Image (cartoon, rainbow, N blue to C red; front, side, top):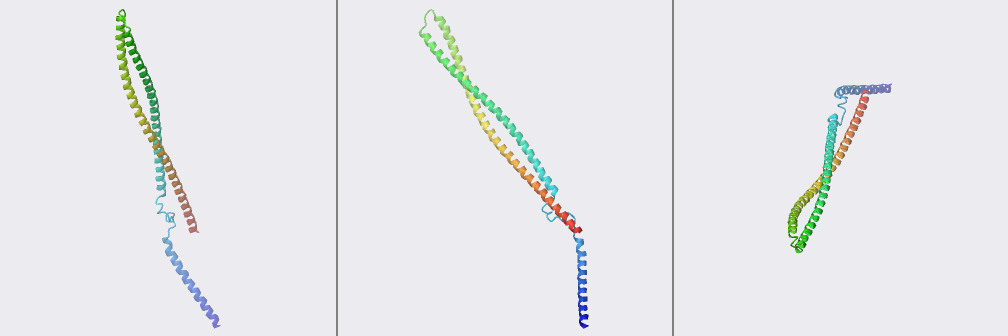
Length: 225
């Protein structure tokens, strides 16, 4: 009998202890629960890493648009430079052709000048009294023609010098434009690469946001249950 009473006493004491612990846990639960906010904003542990998701996406998208604008502007500049380059090449071909033509004319005039001098000497050696007046006229005309030819030769020489100078300048301009074209094309390629990188960052950011939203929904479901 005494053993039975002792067992009941121990059981009663154990139940009392369990009741006290349960009451303490319930009190603690109600004290702690109000301080827990299960809203979407508070359940984002990584929110400090992404302070404003919409702002980040908007900023990256804006940067992409700016890059596209820069790419368009550089593409237009390349087209303009290409047009200038083609015009210079056409002008260069024209000047080169003119240069060769003037050189040939100069050679012809020099040859004619030499031939006229030879003829003048020959006519002077074979001069006859009856033909004196005629030869005198021819000599005068020949002298005029020679003077005229000398003037033409001088003019051609000046033109040739000017053409050579223009050719040299045009070649320099062509080289400068080619270098600028190469630089612009490299910049354009880099801009495309930067745009691709930013788009990848945007997609990655959106994926992270979607993952966080899914985690929030799961936490909300767990809380409700």
